[in-house]
Length: 209
Image 1 (cartoon, rainbow, N blue to C red):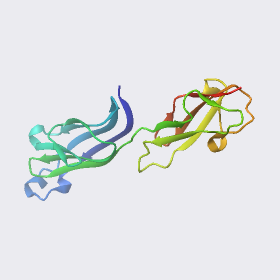
Image 2: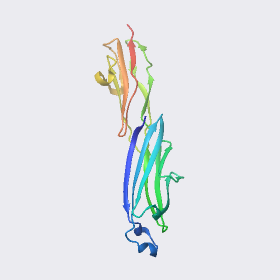
Image 3: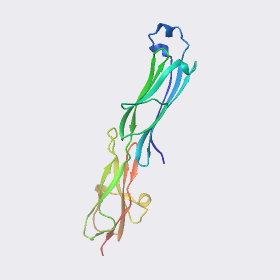
Image 4: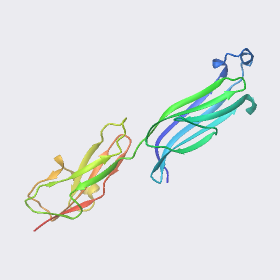
C-alpha cells in the first residue's frame, strides 16, 4: 500500500527561443513545448520510492526534439516515467529535453523523502510489576527525525484503561510517583512532528498489593 510523504508538481510552458543561440531557431519564434512534471515520494512494503513522470506536448510534433532523460541524484533514465527505490533523505531530480536545434530545456527540484517517525518503548516492560512505594519512570527512544525537521513534541500518556489515546492524560516529566490509586496503569507514547505523527504500542504496569 502506498503512503504519500511528499507531493510536488511543476508546470512548465517555456519558449525554447529564450535559451537558443541558433539563428535558424530564432526564425521559428512560434515553436513551443509544454510539459508537465510530476514528482512523488511514497513508501511501499517499508521501502521508500520516488516516482517521476513527464508529459510532453510539442506544438509541432515529436520530431521537434531529439531526446529526453531524467537525472535522479547521479543516475540517468531515458524514459518519461521512472520509479526507483531510494534511501530516506534529500534527492536531486532533473528532467532534461533536447530539441531538434540542440537547445536544452530542463526543470529540477530537490525531493525530500521523509523517514517515518518511530517510537521504541524501553521501560517499563509489558505487565511490569511495581511496588506501591516505587516511582515508575517511562523511557522511550524516538527515531526517524529528518535533518530538515524540528525535534518532535513527545508526550507520555497514562490511563486507568486500555483506551489510552481517548481517556489518558499526558504526564509531566515522564514518571508516576506514589501513592497509586489503581491496580493497573496503561501507558503509551505519542510523537508529533510537522510531517508525521507516531503512536507507540500500549503497555500495562501492575501495582503489587
